[in-house]
Length: 131
Image 1: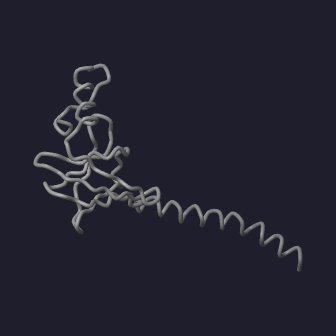
Image 2: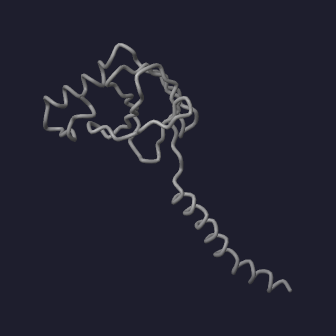
Image 3: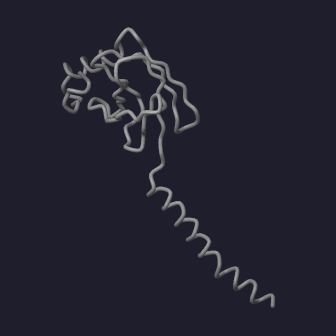
């Protein structure tokens, strides 16, 4: 139901109740999750046919899921924009990890270079006055 639902509108109480029932009362096999830092989580879940794993972490395309060395699809939940992991039926130990995008790493490098470049002229002036 969560995957098939259209984006959830807060004014549609019937759909909102159905969504919360699925999330809060879900299947008889609850998942367990343990955070490892701020950007990695281990999830243990038993997934039945037609089921997915809902992780109540805001969806971002940089979140990735892996089970037994295989990448699993991650997509936004239409109800609350959480992350949904599509795992095949069975028992899974899933690593859910935020992989910092290249754009962020390039931005960090440029920021460091800019700070260094901004500090150089003042350092040169200080050194030239001492000589």
